[in-house]
Amino acid sequence: MHRIAFVLIALTAAAHADEAADVKACNAGKAPKCEALADSYREKDAAKSLGFLEKACTAKSSRACNNCGTAWSEGKEGATAVDHKKARAFYERACGMKNGLGCFNLGNVYRLGEGVTADLKPAYANFKKSCDLDEAKGCTELGIMQYEGKGTAKDPALALTSLEKACKLGSEPACKNVEILKKAAAKK
Image (tube, rainbow, N blue to C red; front, top):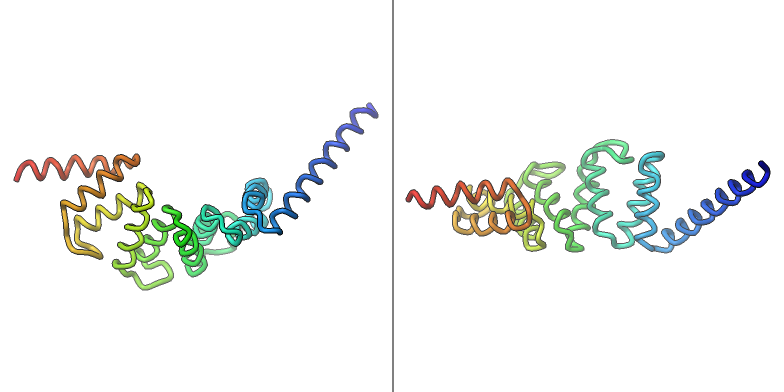
């Protein structure tokens, strides 16, 4: 019995030492350690999890920056409330680090007018960046905007190209739109 208790105490002490080492590495700017800590706290302490995620963003993790933006955009995952200004700042950082999903989310900020005046030109520009970074969602939105002439001149041929790329990247809605556009073009 005493041996089992000793083993459990030793294992608990080792786990705390590992966590302390991870916190030290995170505080030293090691983004992967910050992200691992954020993941480990997600269920038990969302605010602490978000704090580690923000540190990972500061340490240049584009994924962490995008995830922070989503947390603030939705008021979840440790964010105390919806804060579109903070969300936009995190999405800008993610997009600036060439995170395609961050650029897509930033495009939606401008398209929907979340914390900014709705403006389709920057929405279009960010969806284009997202698509250029091979994010299927960005290519899908880009194609729709090109087809409808929102934020750019109407261009069905360019829309088809963007939607085909989105389809190749795995977007089922884009694949359906490609079929529709090709059928419409065949009827002309």
